[in-house]
Figure (tube, helix red, strand yellow):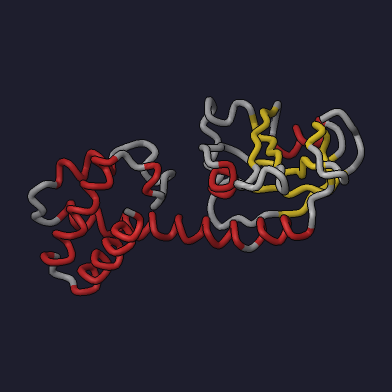
Length: 206
């Protein structure tokens, strides 16, 4: 980040029920103010290295001091990010990554405000639904509840949401087995239907 030109960026707030916000940044102090301290950089090209270069500035102590999880930034950069994040465009007008910040293109701003927001909200809602259903299964007479409890008691099980790529195989198997049992044995019809719905999601991800 060698230049000090004011550029258009996107702030991804941490926590739930948050939305990307357009901000202006210039030198490193403006980014520090937005992320709450010194920062580290993360990058993603969204699988399109010739077309995309997004640079994220995140609090460098976010994990250490356990800042609130940033669902939006974690989904965007594919890693756990804590605290607010500032995202800038990394490609120059000539299409090269030059280490400077550049104005965020409108199409990327639109993606962050719509697609990313919807994808993240969906994953979080699935995780919240899974939490409710799993708790009901644990409180019932499910015979293998110790295995399910081992998954639910993990410190980051909610943070991982319903992203099966972040689950260990034994965790995904334990959840699927519990959902199968719940779809057949829970007393409440709505909960049985919920188990079947969640089980379908897991099977589609295999």
